[in-house]
Length: 410
Image (cartoon, rainbow, N blue to C red; front, side):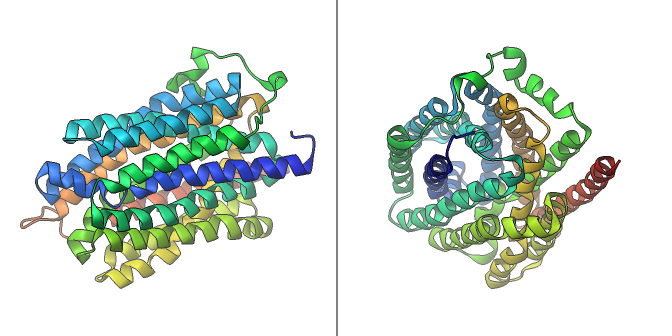
């Protein structure tokens, strides 16, 4: 732990700003990337499949690289890993800004998956500098920083997308470069040499990292809930922009404004509500409550006949922001300080497995539910399925939580 409260608070501020800049750079391209894919693919339905493939490629790289990057941060410290990842992300956005075809975009998404694996290190950094009973709130602050970046990112991307579909990529490259410069100047190291662990490929490969999740029964159960949470969440990255354009006729600017609203709600949920709600309900009940709320929101989105009702459904959907930091907090209690990077790498691998399968699944579902002769009866079918998956996660989370609570009382 940091030797003084003042230094710890400064480190928290540094990591939150770095996280916000990183996610802002990624959010900028969201309103225009599916449209660029559609331009290359030739149709909206084909773009749904290709967009799913691209998100899956990104997630596959996360699956392979997150445990490696997490283990490297356990060995060499958090700071160098974060810095290398942010400057790599800047280079990736330049590549995508120049992409002349789908294959260049595919390479760009793969590089982006590798460089974005630094998010595992950001969570490990926060675990280094906070006490276990404060981590739900601390992870909520990270989520709020991500959401803050996500408020500005899509909004800026929507505005720039009206000028040129390539402009948001250049802006994203500049923001990533700024994140690198900021981190280089002010981000302190959080993991002292005495707490570091030797690098091992046995721990760093994705399957070896996943073994850590089986070391405790609650840890394994939470890993399943985490998987289902991320699986459902990818309905947005896979089909939302295409769906909004198809069903409601929204432009990149309108999509950007709505995504900014989503980010604002997430920022309030994770930055403001997580702390007091976990104090009142505890981490486990808060997690389950958030998952149920998210399922209600997704169902409402699929049913919404108008853009205004779809936007209103974002309110209950935002509650699943309560589940993300509480799952992370509960999991960190079952591993040592020297294994926090490995744990976050394993968590990201779980998320990446979901990220490979989910976009392909939802992209296919979307392509089957739109067009002149859709095979599925409702264009919102993907959102209904995501709601069902999140509901299953809520049920599993409740069962796992009750078992863990009973064991702790014995």
